[in-house]
Length: 151
Image 1 (cartoon, rainbow, N blue to C red):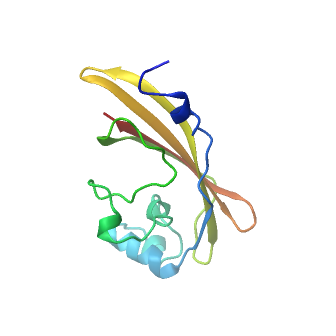
Image 2: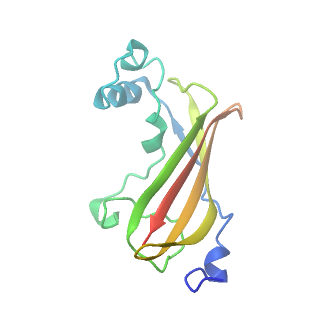
């Protein structure tokens, strides 16, 4: 076992945050489409959400003093890691259904993995979260796997 990854830390694997439910509005789709430079009329009209629209849909709206030093909302799903410098490690999204105005979406995030690797400058801790999003009919809309790295 690694000195960094204790049994207590690894015991957090499989823990889920409470589900978050949000409604998709035509206005929010239109604002996102304009902000991200979309060109397809179906996005600009708000008829369908473009890729990546969901990413901020489930974020907490918090005041500045509730953000980490890198400007990210502090994630209550995560345990305290022994390394502190956070970096992006990857994002994989599988889409199963279109996102359209009026959809009520529920996201459930789970801490699915924690592991360590050795980098050229020392130990790195990787963690993965999986977010499953379903609609009110229980149909899977998307699955997102996020990898972050601490050094």
